[in-house]
Image (cartoon, helix red, strand yellow):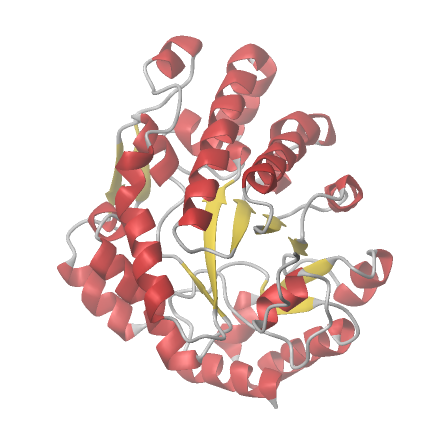
Length: 345
């Protein structure tokens, strides 16, 4: 017997249905733009302490739902909990971002766990269970992971880099190591996302934040193929799971992602013109995005025109309103409220 259709707007969109008004959530919606988040962050200890505290992680996940009534909650965590669970040393320095003990050879890789020890991520899964029990009935719960290329870029460089040059150079110089690392992360991501679905997530988003750094020859083996393997592995284990794929800076590679036809939804960054891109996509493919986060900071006419452009372009297709990247800490709360009101007017 097939499952009954969902009453949740985002799950309906991810099943290919046109839903109006457009459902909305924001990448990084649990974060520093919220004073209630800043209060908890100040008392939590380190950033990783917050990620691994189920009570606090659940609370900050729920904060934007209470304040804005978004149609989805995305669990508060970080893409680097996967390499951390595999055994890589990671710290988060205030104002500096993550710092990792670099993994840049097969010898380094052999020092890490071969398979993901899910017990080390138990606090994240417990936070999902807590959020699931506290969400409004109409709100979708999202899990997530970083795409292997993005996570590998941090693991290799030991920090974020402007153009992912350390990882790109290694991909050319030592392709055997790079593919081994990508394979390790792909298998770990399937296990992690499957566990998130079991803990209560209904859909997941895979974040390829550094897709723009890859030339076409490397995009297939280092980005497209691993993400496809993750989605297929997840759906093989949990057929009901829905997957959103976000490749920031996909550019010409967006067509390859769409043609591969494995994602339930493709998230679009703010650099893409929806009036140009959406008519070229299959009608039943759900999309997500793509308001410029800086228009949300600016407010006024820039925000109104930006929201209206998304609403106009996406009104006849399955679409989830979102930003084209994460919400920024300096975003005024009143602008978020105005955005949500305009979407739902």
